[in-house]
Image (cartoon, rainbow, N blue to C red; front, side):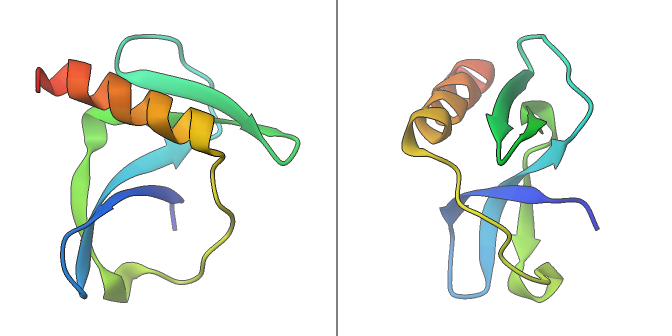
Length: 80
């Protein structure tokens, strides 16, 4: 199962998330960062709603600086 980054909780059963990849890409729709000795890319253009039943386990938490940078790029991408 693909790892995701939870952006916002919508209800007790669902959230908005962004899929992550280990293939590094550089473009407006991507954000790459290092975490636990591995590089990841957030695929901003694949934002989606996910139900809690799809979660298997919590792997780690992203540091606050990278999280806010992803949210900023997502807002720019969606023109919010």
